[in-house]
Image (cartoon, rainbow, N blue to C red; front, side, top):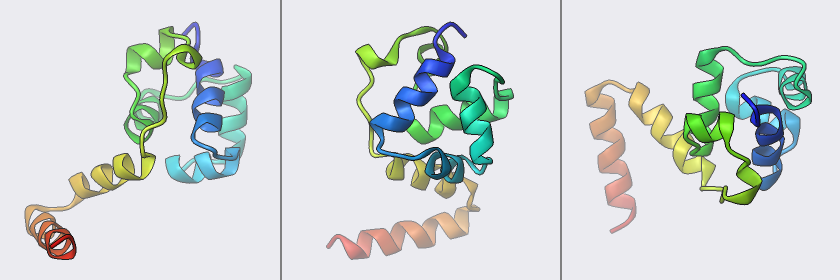
Length: 105
């Protein structure tokens, strides 16, 4: 967890988010984000994995790599859409798939 606090702040800023906006994306309180960035607290495993999914970061990198040297923000909306899609049952996924497919024709 050598770089975790630093990386949380970097990821947030690289994606142009306030602490409140990042908290909303992760369904957390903005005070949680602030305490993570300050190194006062660390998130539980579920929250850490949510950060990885939403922001397209590997767990090892989030914890042990200085992301300011290599992280390029992905379209976090895509990651969020994928996470939401995975929560749907197969019938709902088929409906969403067909809707999106019809929109890009």
